[in-house]
Each structure stands twice: as C-alpha cells, then as structure tokens.
Image 1 (spheres, rainbow, N blue to C red):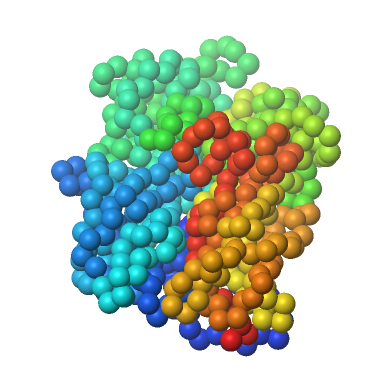
Image 2: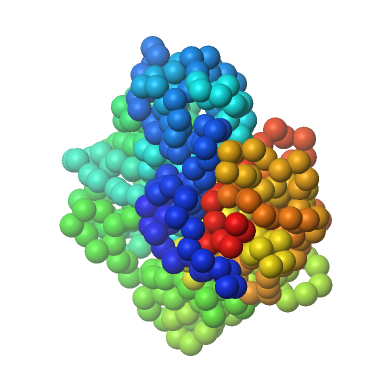
Length: 522
C-alpha cells in the first residue's frame, strides 16, 4: 500500500454504544491515519502540513495551516517533521506567517522531506490573532510525502524499484535518496547482472567515474564493460560477459545506504524486455501463513528446490529495515519452504512472525538457500497484514475515537497492537480547545492476541463537554524492553539515549488530537 492507500485502506469502526453522530469535526484528509480533526472555537487547530518547495539556497519549506487567523510571530523551533521509522526528524530553523492562517516553516539545507511522513506542532507554534491562545501539540500527515515505507516490499532502507540498461551500462533505481559517499565495494559485493543460466556478471572495479549518481540521488549507473563472471557450481561461462545476455539486475546487501544510514537488503529486478527468470530456482513469493496469526511464512520458488533448506540464508525484513533470521526453514512440497519462529520461551526470534506481522514487508533470500542453489532476491511479504499498521510511523497511530457519557470514557482505535501504555498521556479537549487539567484515570484494553487493529478505552472522571482527545507521545508503545521479537509488537529496541521517538522501549505514538466520529458527551 502507498501512503494514499494507507489513508483509505480500511474503514474505521464505530465503537460507541448508544452514540449519536457528531457534526463538529472537520473533514481532515491530512490527519494521521484518517482521524478526524478538532474544530475548536478559540484555539488555532492544526489542519494540514504541505511540502511547498526545496532549494539548495533556501532549504525546504513546509506550510503548516490552521483553522483560524494567527499572530505574526510563529515559533520556528515548535515545527517538526519526522520519518516512518521515527529515527530521524527535522526542526524548522525559521518560520513566517503567511496567508493569515498558515506558517511557512523552513528547514535548513536541501533536505528530502518527501521521505518524511508526518508533521508536528509541538505546542505553542502559533497563537490566535483574536484570542492570543496558543496552539496545542498536534500532528498531521505530511502532504507531499511520497514514501511507501512500511508497506509491502517497502522498508525504511533503500528498496530497489527498477533496473534499466543503455549499452554496457546498467542503472539501478531506488525508492529514496541514497547517501552520496563514493562506493568502495569489491566487485562481488556490489552490483551484478544475471544471465538466464544463472551465471552472475559482476561489475568492474569501482573508480572515480563509476558508479554515477543521478541528479535526484536515487539512481546509480554502473558500467559492465569489463565484467567478470561466476558460474553456479563452477566451470567456464557459456556466453560472453555482455549486458545483452543478462536478464536480471542484482544488488548485494548493504551496498547502498539511505541518508539516515539504513543499508539495503539483497535486491533484484528484471531487465527491460526480459522475464528475469533463470535456470535456477527463482524466488516467487512469500506469504504470511494465516495472515500473520501464526509463526510461519511460506516461500515459493518457480521450480523444484530439493530436500533441504538453509535457514541462515533467509532473513525476515521488517519495515524499519532490520533483518531477522527465522528459527527453521523446512521444505514444503516440491517448490516451497516454510519459515518459522519458535512459540514461547526465549531466543532472538521467538514469536517474531506473529508478533511482528504488522511490520513484516519482505523475505530476503540469499544464494544457497535451497539444495539446488537459487537466485538471490527479497520478495514482498505482508503489506500490513489485514490492513494493519496503517498509520504513518512504526508506532501506534490513533485512527478514530468515540465518546460515551454513560461511563465517561473515550474508546480509541489504533492501527496496530501495543505493548505498554500511560494513562497520563490521554486528555480531553473542550469546545474552546482547552485541554483538561486531569488526564485519564485509567485505561482498559482490547485484545492484542492476534494481529489486527485494536482499541484502548480511556476512563475519565468526567467527559461531559469534551469535543476532542489529545494523546501525547508515549501514551502507547509497541515494545517494553528485553527481547524485541518476544516482548513487543513492531520494530523497536534501538540504542537507549537517542533523541528520537524510538529507544530501548520501542516505538511510541506521535502526539495527536482527534475529534470523535460519534459522541453523546453533551
């Protein structure tokens, strides 16, 4: 799913009991995960954030717009954009009020904010011209983002999206800007092309003029004039080393990196006008068994594979670009392999497939993964199993809320499972945009036993008069320390002490204010 399909992939469930429709929320196609935006009477409410331009001289500009006329002194440091994996973010360096109700926030340098997925006013970014009331902390989808990270075959690492040829040169195009440092990979660790018999042609030694980066930084062109060849099983090549004899392009693991430092998985794609098929078993597909409700993935090849499979040559690719080795790889019929991770207990991959089902986007298959040898590839998998993890980060996004006056609660639907939570981060917002002094008194929870959207009910002393719900960052988390695979849902467990939204306790939600889709709160 692309970001657009994330916004529309699954209908939002109406969870209120005896609730009536609420006409007040604004239409908010820019809200996180399709949530409704609050339209208060006094506070300036964030309604959109749009990338408007990027130049080397002037930096990148994002226009934050509100539903009220704002004062002339926005605070630059309160405007922020972030990436799908939450590991990198940007704070504005300047901010200027424009068009009465918008702010042009400029981010220094020529930055590719199209790979960012959300924008945040951390609170107090603007004030209302009429009331001098500050904006509340809130986030919205970043319009102009074109990343597909977190969807089928798309991780935060550079993903190969196409290969083209021109004479002796082969161009490899990725889905994001690559780090600009010159490549120093050896011949057999970088770019290659495959012939139909499985023979691999490796590019000539990297020189100052080879490879060549495209102007947009997403394509690398390699000259195969002096390519060397390796034949499966040894022996002399059957044909000359020419691009014309190749059917598929191949990029080894970690040959290129994103600007945030993520290395690519093994990647391959058919050359133009070629099927890409070889005489070796070619990986065709990998699917979650039981739509992520089990600890199994079924990998299929285009021909018989023999009686054994080498588990070390399979890696499960998560949306944050990390690779995980399954516990077992067992042939299943003539041309398939079942990957599995252990259930219960410990170990680095225990419960990985079931617990990470929302975040699995591919399976990397190295050579010698099956008895008869095979070509290398990363095949798409998952794709937000069951339309899960449909938000804009690896943390849980709130998709909808409903208010129930009979028990003073707000039920929130999240796009994925969560592991830990903090009632103190849930607060109601009244019609004027004023945050309640007291947070939720307690939380009660929907099922997290199987992959799927899930709910949290926030319980308050009173919800009378509430028109919105703010969930601050840290209200819900995907992971709780220890073993990331066994004790949480979704990627997490990066080094403690970093300044991003992820850390030793995994990914947390981005701050959101959302209006209820239904309410009887008065």
